[in-house]
Image (tube, rainbow over all chains, first blue to last red; front, side, top):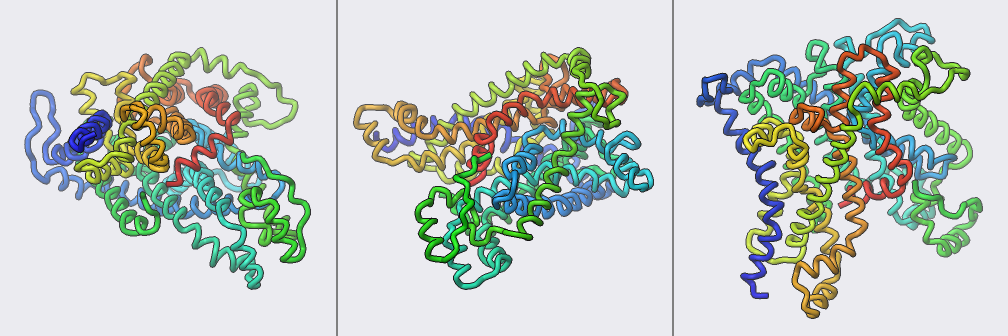
Length: 291
Length: 308
């Protein structure tokens, strides 16, 4: 093939994917910015240019700041815990303990289920009086508590669900990494007289670093992307105690139909995700080589 | 999950004997993972086993609870006695209380449509990125990678506007379309295509194959494990997807089963948990059964898809 024909061929191969990608990823990201400078059209009144008005609203909106803070706490509460649990699970099911096949299954199954179904099950689990949790705490003589209904515990109760669902997923990647490690490393370390913990800390953990970074990026994205359980379990309540950013966007955009303000809110989310991408590019790109 | 290798009951004692034995069974080395040198033993092993099982039981508890409630009459839903009679009534009631058959059909259509379209588009794009030299390749690839971070899941406001403009609101097509050009798939397949020896490619061209024929006869067959991995990940993702379908659909004819389940359980069911848990298990049933049957493929696929 001549060079120009090869170019043409490649572009044609890319055309269908590019069109859809631009239409549903790049265009909406740019259009979102554009629309965030306009007002929401109402009835016969078309959208008018309002400059930074939506961002001013956002800045003065206590619920936005609440959702923003909630989301940060949510990320902080779920990410480290699920990663540590995933690592522990992987180490355990990698060792030759009794019934590890069943354990892998137990840890991994929540990953396969839809978040919406999982949320239904946990909603029942947390139900005041009838729920399993209340029955267990009741058996120990602890006072009744509405886990999802009180401001102090609702977000934590949701974090538990997220950790439960995600840890098994991340475990898989740690398990793969552990299994691909050369046994000679351990032998060499044993000859040098390293203790098990020392070996784990100084050899295993550093070798798992690329896996940890990969899992970390995924966990961060998920913390801002997945709000299915909020829709089912709390609808952001009580008193916005469990409103996360994307959930708030959904409420503003599709329950109050204020698309312009929702666009401004989406920009915040896009900037956050952009920062994650940038951090990944700076820290991760050096270690894992996309070839 | 992965089948255990040969039982490693014999524990070699000396270092020389150990490496001699290990040399003889390198194939199981990966199964052993952190080699047996540091495998816990005695009290440590007991402690670890107990810890792992406690965590395992905690992990299945919510599911086991759901199963209990769904398979027993409502009066036993929170009353745990072994004599409780088993019943399928809750499932029957749930099935008749909402058009689940239609929801399943919609989800099946959605998942199939998305997967087929993804496979075609992703294959073509990955081939171009893996084996063609053309101006703008790096820029285009970077633009593809953007979608790994900014997924359609967060662009709901604008995509809703676009779907309205295209007149596609409340259709199964609208649920799937934003996900069809999958950056993840392009990336994954490009990696696989790059490992195909160029000699095979050139041999096919010498035989007179066009690039598309080469793709079909050389690359696609060699990438079969990647396709399987991608298909499983894609199917479970779209079977489980919820927020976007919730927004874009508004009728029984287009709702997937996740949204159907939410409409059903948030509706006027009151709080009949027996029926709601039955409906929940019903909606996840096909995926759960498939997972239990093909655990190993699922887990390996997720691994393969994750390691890049």
